[in-house]
Image (cartoon, rainbow, N blue to C red; front, top):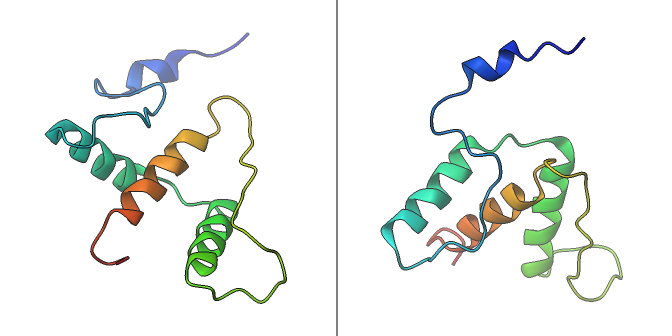
Length: 97
């Protein structure tokens, strides 16, 4: 038998999935990105991905791989869209520029 009681403790603003197609010009689009960044749980795999992504943008890689294409895969609900929302939010900052 599956215990479903943990659903009762979810916050009212819980989102089942992350939308990456929000209107960036709208205030709620910016708030959504900030919330996505603050709520993101960095795993060892996502940390490696983000570090590699930034290193390639800055041309600070040691391997001979050309280009910056990535194959992002995972099960439904594993956080692929959340990771891309975080990446978008981080790239749209004065720190990165």
